[in-house]
Length: 183
Image 1 (cartoon, rainbow, N blue to C red):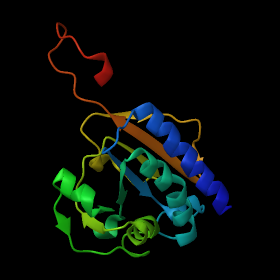
Image 2 (cartoon, rainbow, N blue to C red):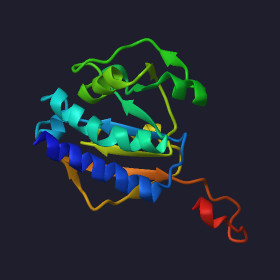
Image 3 (cartoon, rainbow, N blue to C red):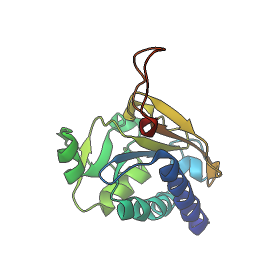
Image 4 (cartoon, rainbow, N blue to C red):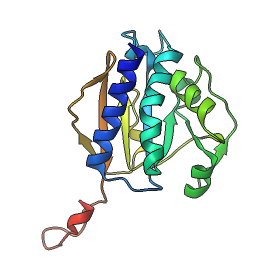
């Protein structure tokens, strides 16, 4: 079961990265309900094993491409995010003092905290793309113009996934011309 979750997570992140065209040094946000993955109501059946399976599926893919992961905590930590200190410094995010655990922050954020080299928590990010596993509401952590992305895979475990990439705003009206590579 957990191997299948890992495979699904890897497939989903790989597909989303292909569509979103993130580059080395970009930021990718994941909100993940391990409860929903296990078929339970969000916050009611936390599973460190499911969280680790998702991490093991997505993190090597992100690392290989040099893309930073920001793992969204649950509402008990006001949806703070766990990321590498290097990424927080690069983007100028203010570090806050909290350490997630399974019942305040969530299993996925806890797993990320335990597996990063120098993990820190921040309150807000503006990622270029992201994946919401189990209705965790990542939209507040995406750049302003989010574009939904449909993948061939619709669930990880029992949790529905919703993905998005972002794009720069179109400005200028009907006479403006736009750069194709920024769409």
